[in-house]
Amino acid sequence: MKIIILGSGTSQGVPKIGCYCETCISKNPKDKRLRTSAYIEIQGQKILIDTSVDFRQQMLNNNITDLDAILYTHHHVDHILGLDDVRQINQLHKKYIDLYGNNLTMEEIKTTFRYAFNEEMIKHLAVPLIKINKIENKNFKIRNIDVIPIEVMHGKLPIFGYRIGNFAYITDCSRIPETELKKLKGLDVLILNALRIEPHPTHLNVEEAVRMAEKLKPKKTYLTHMTHDINHDKINSGLPKHIELAYDGLTININ
Ligand SMILES: [Zn+2]
Ligand SMILES: [Zn+2]
Ligand SMILES: [Zn+2]
Image (cartoon, rainbow, N blue to C red; front, side, top):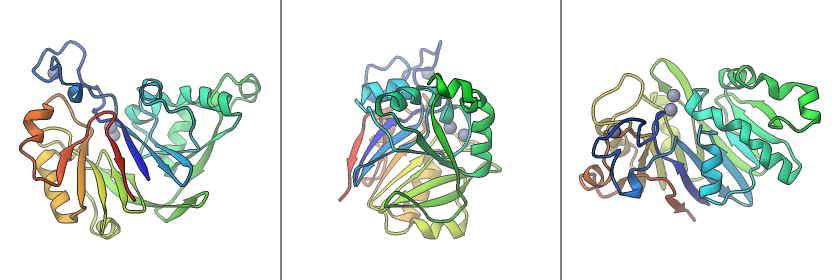
């Protein structure tokens, strides 16, 4: 299994428009963060997690030209709005793309992208060709790949993280219910959100994410969905050895 972190930034991205703080003007490429998304290749299947606002740039940056399925964590704009550019994948490979998400996420996508369900537009290939698959908090398959949804809380909103094999991806989480923690045992790699240094009502901060990683004990944890509060080198150097900040383009291989 190969995983690429396509974006590690919060909803406004880093640098933030009009900000000249240390991180926003940093020359370190690890301080440039597109909006949060990841790509997984496993047994020939190409799976994307979320279509961030930066989807097109992320496909170009990483030379990704095909997708089989998209797993959605939730419907917030930073996680869905790049969906229109899936058109290019449809046209290149003459296929529909399967979308997976909970009921609310799929309904919100149907509303936000209502033009994509217009028969006339579909005929002219002027819209993303997508197939909605509503999932519940139960294991399901994408072709032959087993996917385990993990229902986590994003403030008061229940959203999905996902586990595939010994890899799990959780973003925009502020709390993981006890019943879901059990699904996160024995991981090789965990991607977990850590918004900033200060606490936040709907996202884990760095301290809380580190505490969560130490409780779950994956072999390796990478933190993502970060604001400009987090200067890569400064914060990364202070983390425990098995925990690191993710960065755009980070590639992880798991056997
Ligand atoms: Zn800044
Ligand atoms: Zn969100
Ligand atoms: Zn977000």
